[in-house]
Image 1: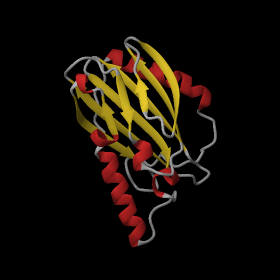
Image 2: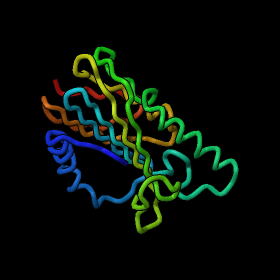
Image 3: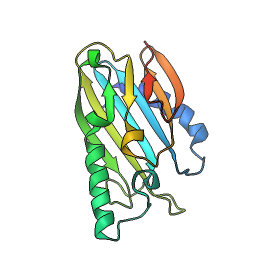
Image 4: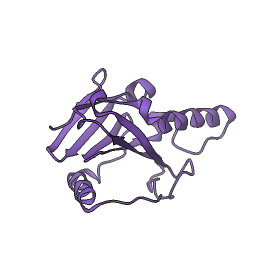
Amino acid sequence: MNRRFSTPTLVLAATLAWPLAAVADKAHQHGAARLDIAQEGRLLSLALEAPLDDLLGFERAPRTDAERRSVEAVLASLRAGGRLFRIDPAANCTLTGTDLVSAPLKLGPAAAQGPDGHGDLEANWRFDCAGAAPAHVDVGLFEAFKRMGRIEVQVATAKGQARTSLKRPATRVVLPR
């Protein structure tokens, strides 16, 4: 992954990561995902960490043709981040990049699987927003992944930080303005 971050982006990322350090040792939990949203200038970044069980119904490399088809469908859905996240139309955002990491699925670095055998997937999306700063993001993960039950959300923008928890049927994350 070839990324270039400005100093403010790194500060924003550190701001998001700091509260996560306190919960980093929490156990892998099925049904619960974590979504970090950061907005700086025109860049809107979303980072998801979810158990593979929430996305696929299993946490290992696929073993059958049906499981391989399921993996391909999930990966296609994740790569189409513009359909998973409906960003405030006034922001005029365009998806510019997607990175997926999962050891069991052999995506990205092999560090995504915990020592206990539980497999996760990390997804990162980058959007270029040419319009106004987005006021909200509607999250379509519950629609796409029926096994997902809760999403812990952290948001950081130049205007402030926020935390919320989304549970079905709630999908909207309001960004600090």
